[in-house]
Image (tube, rainbow, N blue to C red; front, side, top):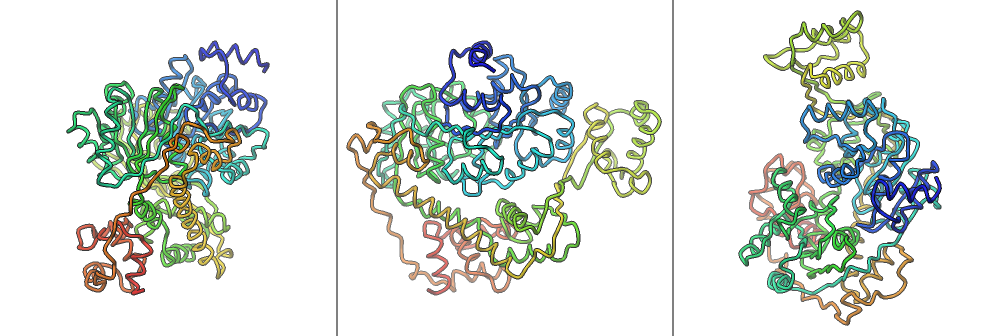
Amino acid sequence: MLGKDMQQLLQQYFGFSEFRTGQEKVIQALINGHNAAAIFPTGSGKSLCYQFSAIVLPHLTLVVSPLLALIQDQLNFLHSKHISAASIQSMQTREEATDVYRQLKNAEIKILFVSVERLNNERFRLFLKGIKISLLVIDEAHCISEWGHNFRPDYLKLVQYQKDFHIPQTLLLTATATDAVIDDMSQKFNIHAENISSTGSYRANLNLSVLGAAEQDKLSILLAWLQTRLDLSGIIYVTLQKTAEEVALQLQQQGLSAMAYHAGLNSDIRQLIQRKFMSGKLPLIVATIAFGMGIDKSAIRYVIHYDLPKSIENYAQEIGRAGRDGKAADCLVLANTNNINVIENFVYSDTPEACAIEFVLNEITQTKGQWEVLLNSLSRESNIRLLALKTLLVYLELEGVLTPTYSYYGEYKFKLLVSQAELLSRFKEERYHFVDAILQSAQKAKIWSTMDFDKLDADYPSDRHRVVTALDYLDQQGLIELQTQQMTNVYNVFQDKLDSGIKSRLVKRFVDKENSEIKRIGHLLSYFTKNQCLSLQLAQYFSDSQLLQPCGHCCICLGHDVVMPKQEDLPSLKQFNAQELMADISSKLPENVSSVLLARFFCGLTTPIFARLRVYKITGFALFKKYRFSDVKNWIEGK
């Protein structure tokens, strides 16, 4: 496609007279049939790369997003431009979802948004295999890389899904990726260097500032800073849900219109708060990182980090939500080192113990051929948190021990929405007998019937995929209401790969990942305390060659060095009697409990076994949450 034709389409559909930096190169690569990656700063127009391409490409563009609940802005924008777009999500009514499926079958939709978790749905994957798809778009693509700041194991499956759905092209989008992450992403999806477009991380309209603030002074400093910005829209980021509630309440008591937003709130309340913020009725939100992903509000005039962010990547993403309209915006960090230990301890809570890894390996050893896994059950039994367990299974795939075959729901339940006679009257000959066999083989309760695949196969031998497709069809036609439960992942097991060194290799991978995350926190602390240009440091961290000299307008460039307050003095752990404090919790845990598990208890870190035993009210839980995990572990071991 010629440049003038692209300009004409850009004006016709989007009302823009020219492309932003980097957009045209990405779009041209896609139109020419190549895979591509766009590494643009937050708010720099990554979405247009697939929105424009979707108009030109012949079939569906499938967009995988980490948080589908916040994608409504994208849909509203596309609908305003008369571009057919939709999403599949759990919040939809049955009628809404059925209508989307109908439009997809009829090729009436150009762009479909789904969450990565939606692709675990056996019914949905079977459906997609029957749809022609031109382009797979992976938003927040850094989640693919285990060396990224937000690695999500489900993202690793997208390489295989692209092959399963016969999707010829891929576009990766992210705002935050180091060279190592970019290399990792591009190798997985075979993206050539010339089709990777990076426009740099520097945004000249963002004024970055860091202010050293003792914990007890942060609120008064915040209130004074906000006095000159009462009518402006902003976000205050905190680490903990409790802090979000407390700070929002304090601001309300001072007459400011502010509300807390975090994952602990009911989803309806979160959506209401988000709508009020987006519409301008609520100028200020105090939020954990649960807020912001996918938010496209152009006139956010400031972003404040009341607590230190989790990483430099998180910081870059979060400040990127300010000033998307191109006008000046302020980004302030109230910094002290008090919660560094809290951030570190989150990392330690995710690393599985060697005995937990051994438990999973033993489960696999006892399996012949195929291994069926209910993740929630295995998480409880092995005492490995769910995300870490998914990561372990990915590592086992990389070791060649496991190969994922498919996922399915262990239970399919349905109720008839029409009489059985009326339902069967829709079918003739073999299809009539097939559907009748499905109904007859199901275990019937008062209202709901549960599918019995074994009985059906004995009475009327049928491929499972055909049965699932039929149930899905009956649901879409409004003849039954279908419910699915108990997601089960099925793996092929290769016992010969379970050599004597595998446990130690897996332990090492997790320890290396843990060390990498701790090192990332070290980079973060160095960033805020080095007293060098904040913008230039960011550019160097992300290997951005667009900015090669100090920005001239961050707090350091303006002569305001960061002076960190003295760290809070904590009583020596030697003052506490370890044996006395461990008595209650040790009686609830298995014999030979590890020092790691006890340290997690005292640091207030969650594990599946703690949830099962409800240890949160036992004396000592979270007693040492402000201490470093390694120090607490050494204290338990008597070191």
